[in-house]
Image (cartoon, rainbow, N blue to C red; front, side, top):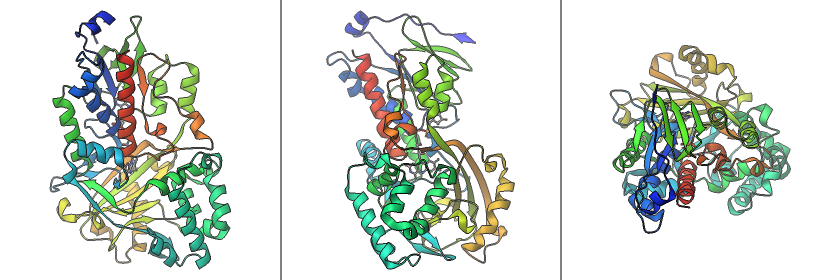
Length: 463
Ligand SMILES: Cc1cc2nc3c(=O)[nH]c(=O)nc-3n(C[C@H](O)[C@H](O)[C@H](O)COP(=O)(O)OP(=O)(O)OC[C@H]3O[C@@H](n4cnc5c(N)ncnc54)[C@H](O)[C@@H]3O)c2cc1C
């Protein structure tokens, strides 16, 4: 293994304007790319010291062969657009990421529309994404629909999530919707998303965040999320960032001179600062020098994985509806069916009709062990419930994507247990999906926390 050594830099180097701070970013998902963008922007570097222009040498280490993280896409040879491995869209309220896109001058490449989201009842699907749709939903008596509407309005208007994190979503929703409305409308969704075993954990602030911040208008980037991630990576590269793809970081160790040594399969490299955007569990393993209080905080963060089967069909499965919420108690083998081409035109995918079958699961769930063919056998029979004429021969191609870290599970009083971005190890910073609370994870909040981490690094290096 090669070992690279750098001279320890001093404050006088910094004052003389000679200093090029070396910063490592672990992960080229939206958080890592946003941090790299800010750290290498010429105006940001000038702002570090006020008068002296300090350029940061940023290296992004990415385990995968491409940038994009969980928002990355893939492309069949006959498609014009990439498709997200895991279904993705933006909400009109996603100010951080839409603001970044505007800043980059790409606002005209963001496409918004208002696809339909549906809820299952009595073997049929009903729209469930507006006040009128809720009032028309036949699954519960009218009085429960009104209660549901009032509750949604309250959560939309109140900015106070702090009191809501003191109670579980299960208890709060049962109290305010009544058992009949809750058991029919939201309990199946909470169980589907988090599993029966986590129902007694998830706090109400998580539910508040979804109603408070989300919009029925959904957006994507022309060419798919991967097109956006690639364009952002290109800008960051032009600003001087070095990318090391296919380079999992296996360790980060503090050096006696105050720097941090980053270890990959190709060697050890010292840096003045390191921002990690990995999962909390991986972060705890990568940095044995983390004090036990911080490492324990990381290990205590709970999350679920995701299994998503993507199908390219030779015809539409359904008409009009984009997103189907599926209660497991009704016998569906997955949580959500997303007919992507009821949102974006099949023309972008060479005429293929794209359907996602997705679920959030404990990483120990048996689905993680199944092959694509085994999951096709599990999932495909249920598609006749969406279209009785469906046949396996409609499937032109399929892809299976799995990730062990997909969805943080926020328990009661979660705000007290979130690890700080600035870790106790000098020069080491951590910015992950598990820290964007009270918001639910999303590329918008990844950009926000990535930029926040970059700002903290700038402040600390400029001290
Ligand atoms: C099923 C699913 C659906 C989703 N739907 C949406 C949606 O509709 N809209 C939305 O905005 N968001 C959605 N998200 C969430 C969104 O993808 C994430 O919030 C976002 O990607 C998080 O960005 P990040 O940069 O923090 O982490 P990630 O995207 O996870 O990126 C982290 C990167 O770090 C790399 N890495 C980790 N450890 C190492 C290491 N040791 N060495 C080198 N590299 C490493 C990983 O390979 C990865 O590329 C969804 C996620 C899932 C799983």
